[in-house]
Image (spheres, rainbow over the protein chains, first blue to last red):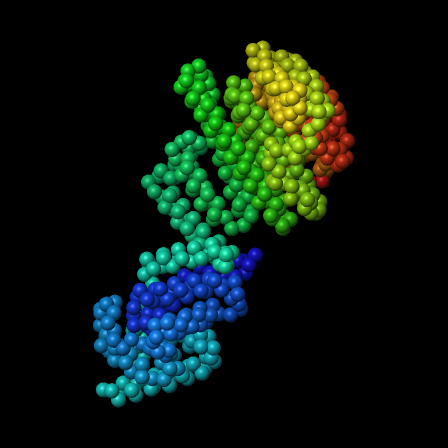
Length: 165
Length: 454
């Protein structure tokens, strides 16, 4: 039976629901309702195409690819810029309790100014909480290259913050 | 450097709210039912989770559900019966393999049989006098109890049938054999329970209830033969795909040959049954059954036969066939309705397997082996056989009703030529038992080959 060979879709959902939500949450200005809707859409899309999913692939990289494409489509729909942007203003009430909110706002504003690839790896690494190997799978890059890029991105971020202060 | 990384590591991690999680699950569930959704990979996990949640909630709530689920006294007509069946349905959803489904259906069959026993005692009480039968109330109570009993008997058979069908889906030989043995055991439990039921309610129950029981008993005997044959085939390493396809797909009580009734066959059946009635009456008298009961029995049969004659006269062959089949089933299983005979049978029964117990718990396997030993002409036995009396004798030592319809005093060759039984006899002959014709009132299973023994 197919289900004996494949991990059940719901198990994948349980495993990645928070991660995908967090992915969208950081990329739609911490708008919870929107992030939840986008999360729902992604998993529905994934379910629809699950039978075509190659089990030899990483589900994580696959679902994130779906999420990324869906986010791009969303931005096109709402006539936003196609680049992934972070909210510079943490206006969401959910973040109001964060102690280092001002610090985070500063960091986000700097990150937004960085080049896309550096920005993306930083967010994947620190906001989404992926390790280098996972980031490599998602971006379809070599792990060593990802490690290098994260180092460079951190270095750049540090310099920009220093320059801003 | 580290300070920056530490700050970045403290970035908050968003989590899906429970409400959103539930909504998404519902959407996924809905989507999975659509044509484009990949059902097999999704539902098997969602359903058990929902089912398990429901079971946990139901079973843990205030003991009511636990009582409903576990008590045999919660039968059809009881307030909690719907809850009991709902819990069972959810439990069934948790089964992931055909073998688990077989076990569950077998368990549910036993439950239904236990409920039927409770209902039969209630029916006996209502007939005996707690609610006078002559009054409207008494009749209503009796009718209600009978209806519940009849439906419970059907439910038990449906569960057993589902167990049979699920066992046919198991391809691995060892597992298939284990499943078939379980199904056979369930059928034997069903047979014993119906025999006890017959003894409990006697012939005071309505024609419909009595017919339900005896037709069911006849059908179970046929089903058991098929199962034992399939088990034997598996033991011989032969894949009897045709038979396993047949097992469980034929509804006991239905007969594919009914459509081929002919005037000749029905007339012949009628004559055979009429001749058997006299023989049975003599046998019952010998067994010291009270004359009044014998009279009641023969009156019931004669009433049926008269209806059959009317149907024959009117050219309604199928109706006549049905009436004759019911009549024959009643003659086949008449002794179960007479407690006087049944007491003697119970004394003769071997071991504790048959003494009023619903199933041979703990010795079920031995019981099954003995059944295979003693009942099947077409399965070779590697060692000396038991006597026919032991194997057959829930039905009475004198073979008042043969498994295939032969009576103690009437040679098997005078059995009605209803194909359902003729087919069985043919199959046993084909297997080369050779002993059928010599055994009165039995299938000639004794002293026959039993290749199926492990």
